Image (cartoon, rainbow, N blue to C red; front, top):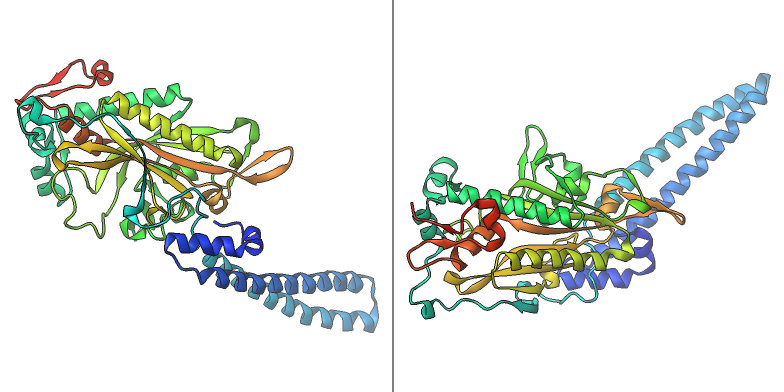
Length: 422
């Protein structure tokens, strides 16, 4: 949530941010207008309540006819206070709903534009030339069948399109990836967490997933719970309505969970295989830190993601995501895209976002130091999203006979150097 004081003092900055995102600029003036009405309603209520308190003291000291007259006035004033309070509550609700529609302020360094207007920061590694190895690369679906690792046909039979089973070496590879990710996170000072994947509306709304991302969220209407699309949601809400001690910051958590996404609007895209699916497992990094340390923390999260990709021995590139492709909570986001040989393209496998104090204000998460109580900054970063990492490993490390070499970093967790045919 945008700081309303900042909005009052810097409306043009917020307008420019909204414009850069390709979002509604006029809402800025609507928020300012309702804020004026809200403050007036609050002032009216507080004035009447002060009169009511003063009158109550006078009633206590009065006697006879004077007291009777004051009691009559007190009843009339009580009605006015009640009406003013109801008006204040209604306007505050309207103001809160409007300000929640504003996205976070863009980082001035974020590229402006749509999905294709990202800026490439770096390339790491060289895509493999399979022609030099004397064979044509197989895609992950074919490799998954040869290895007995991925079963999309039975997944579709049981759960519909974009569903799959990981079996045998596929399941073992997931466990290895998760164990390596958690081990890496522990070394970096993260606390491992297995969070709930069913959350209340406050958690989903507080993290910004009931706005532009709502169409991809599974909602259990009967119970009014949501299935999370990322453990960012329960990790962010973990300290909801809490005041954190400044000396404990940064607080870092690594959450392992299943994630659920409807993939609305993506029909026809990545229908083959397990690149774009409805359910998958992921290890997500989440950090609570002081706002002035958020940019440096963002770079740390990015580096941990790069370290993971390097350990998997996969070529990748890092991109600075353009403003129109950012989630509403992110002020800036970096994606890491792994090279997928059979698509002859880089595809996103991890990302990391700096959400500054935006989510913390919505979730009422603060920290306390010598200068008082202030909102914390929150950041998130995917350490490993299992299906896409499996795709990248299988396709990049395949051999001509369909076997797949295991990256050295995962060999201790698997007890093998190569996935054999079944």
